[in-house]
Image (cartoon, rainbow, N blue to C red; front, top):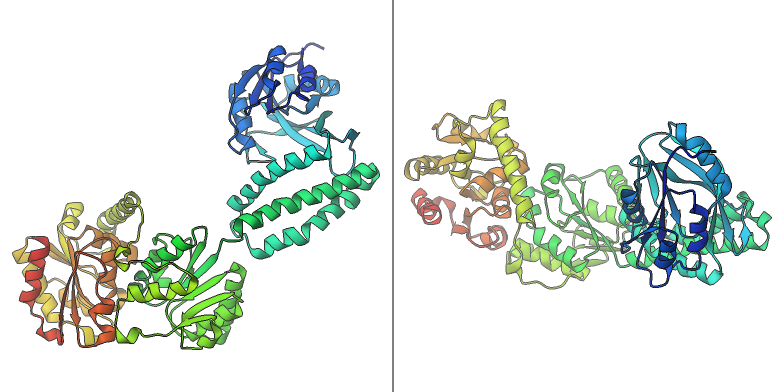
Length: 594
């Protein structure tokens, strides 16, 4: 029969001088082009291939057979591409079927039968006589995966009823040597691709799955019909599965899943960023899961070193809610739980979830914890950042110089600028249509020349008089040529009415931003002025200077514990907040920004 098509044979090889000659002989006179992708042979593989007219390309193996095959495909110039290993032999029946089918087919790829030979014995049973998909129209398919790579086809797939002979191993030693290399790559694939690789799954694949695989090969797939060859093959195949997952266990046994719970207000949460960073740096391969209040979830997703954010609402929970949360945590297969804000419900949930190491403070059912620390925060002897760093030391986190631990929402400045600029632009241009009274045409320029004020605190004892914030806003626009943005949360919306229609250079955004949008506004602002509140910590997290107004007669609530963390900030503190004058704050503003 006349051959009315062209075909390129792509062969992957490395040190295959003992086997490649039979492969090349089976292609001679039929393949229009033979391409050898050699992974760095040190024997005569390349010389043998050249004797058969093959084009030899040296391509260092990078750990992915898919990459090797795609490289060879890119070099092929024929209508069709047949991908081979150097230990495969193309049968005459296969070539005849290709001559019959390929010229007029509408299929983009074909599967064919692969008959494997194990220690000189051709297999029909045991699952080792199967369909293989390595024949395709040029430019119609690509490969994905490291080992046992898969072809992704753009079009229909047909079937060729013919065999390809595969002779991979001449001895058990060769089988074990090769599988040792392959299982290295397979273990890496599992670790990279498994989103939730639990201890339970690893144990199952080590203890149970090898026996199931033996049963499947030897009994279900009738490997016993292959005699002693079938028995040895079934045992070795089960061993390979065990070896692969043993390597997964070896590489992940020191990885931890660490839950860090801080589900109160967003300001308190932000002061945990240095502790989160310290945990991640100590357990470099760990997965950090943050449990936060729903209001904080979007903001928590911007924290460096956090891999996952889950919701655990602040406040008292019913027993049903606590048990349900414990079941949720148990499925996460968590190794360490660090409970940053003391909570009886959280301690119960961590205990019921069987988390091996549970760390927290010594009250609110602390007997459920495995490690606990005396809670001396009420004394206000150090900053909240330092208290948080002290707690995570119980997990084995190395001591740190606190001055180095900036509270930052992004570890990469380029990503930080991109995210914040995007949110700022979206907020400034798009959200004005929702009733936010921005009067400037050039929003970007306006945001660059604003001073933000957050006039409220959650504790009335820490509140600077609102009328003084109002007076301060007026003086800022008159004396500094800057606009003023009043910012705050939804709970402060009603109180913010005193700033509405106050001055055209003063815009009230209270209750009209998410926390991430507020972060973008603070990043663009020159300065934030506030009492003891969450926004001062958010401003620090985006690198904006803060002027914070504090009472200093309440140790547990004073600036030593709750003041802005980091350099470039100003704290004005007095026993009575009413003793802090507008003039004093204006002087601090002028010193910082003018």
